[in-house]
Amino acid sequence: MTFNSIPFLIFYPCVLLGYFGTRLLPEKIGSQARWIFLLLASYFFYMYSQPALIVLILFTTLVSWVSSLVIEKLDGKISSGSLSEKEIARAKRRKKWCLALTLISSLGVLFFFKYFIFICESVFGIVGFFTGQAYRINLNLILPVGISFYTFQTLSYAIDVYRGKIRTERHFGYYALFVSFFPQLVAGPIERPANLLPQLRTRLPVTREDVGYGLRKMMLGFFKKIAIADLISVYVNSIYNNLDGFETVPALGVVIATLLFAVQIYCDFSGYSDIAIGCARIMGIRLMKNFDRPYTAKTVREFWGRWHLSLSTWFRDYLYIPLGGSRCAKWRHLLNVAIVFLVSGLWHGAAWTFVIWGALHAVYQIVGILTLPLRNRLLTKLKLSPDGRLIRCVRTFNTFLLVDFAWLFFRANSTSDFGKLLSALFSGASWRVPIQSVLSSMQLTVPAILLLVLSLALLLLVDRLVLHHDEPSGSGAMVRRGAFICVTWIVIFAWTYLMANDLTSTFIYFQF
Image (cartoon, rainbow, N blue to C red; front, side, top):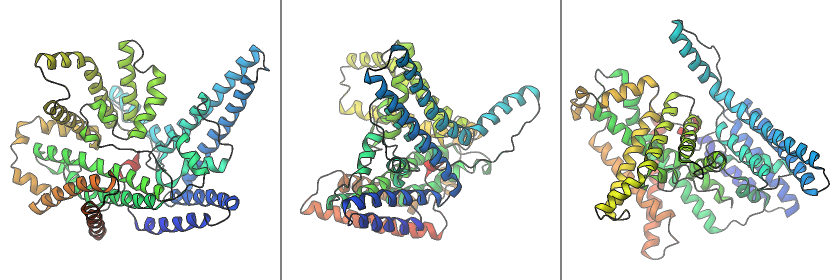
């Protein structure tokens, strides 16, 4: 089930009725009814599109829960002081085996369904290159929606228990709800157990401000997805999905489509996060922030401190720091950065396009680290402050160009496609295609361009006025209400138009 679907518009109000209905019961009965109801609703949400694959969530949930219970039990024995040194060493080995069991089982399921065919095809391609024979694998695997997200969530729980950062959740129902909580189940944010589990166990107060903020956040998310991302996808697809349809792929078309894709993927993914955060907030549950205006970043490193925060911080805490982070030799620090971004690229998809995208971001980071002293000396010689307005603008512009160029690899449908895209960008003939022809092939008419500009301007206004300020009074309140009403009607009209023309699309990050 997707947020931008009619079934969800029926499902979510029913969940709210049931959820708030359990709050009317006596606390002892209501707390039991609440977690049971939310767990069943979450499983229904997931099973709506892929019923059989609920087995994978149950398997991952059960293994990580049992392993963590054993780890904590062993920790208790170790700290009791009643064991000999030999028994302590044996208990520590068992702890490692329990953690390894969770890692192997969870990552094994993820590997098989997401990467097995990709690795086989890559190996067959290499063998075929040297032997001259074509090899194929006849295996059709369905990629379970959200498998990368809930896998990382169970891993963070098991690792935190192993490190002694949190205590195990002894109630299997609450833990299962933590893994499968429907707003963030299929595309995040990737929640930490220390944040979400206590909220699921407690009867949290739901205030008028929670409901108001949640509704505004949801509407902003729908606006980003329906009124911007889905409409922009038409223009992006006209280039990226039609490369064979051009006699000469227009370079200007590639540039425009890639710039638009930067907006599309931000509005698509942050729109999902907004809806997820809003859904939970109406129930009094606060999910972590997942985006913080990433395209205002002044460096690529800062971009990753603003984009998909739940994943960026996950890689930092569970991969980058355990590898040694920056507290090691320079070469090892750079290697750690490269490993993290290569893994991040592979996490996003089982294709070489994503690996190259991750590798490109690794190059950006490494070059940035190596050239930082040189750049600082240059600014000092020129008597320019790194925090001056001009330098900030230049750095933000350069960062956006670098990130946007990398999106070209991310969006390309295949390695052969990004070869065509790069060829177009560096071909003189491609740049000679008339702009009128480019805009026509992309269906970018004057009204369409004006609509895009107005939609983006309204997004900036709503994002600033509706969500990121305290409750205003007087004229400020009128502006907020007016913006909210505008967004609501635009979402309704855009959704009606998209549904009528069969242009609605699933969220991009569902494939990850």
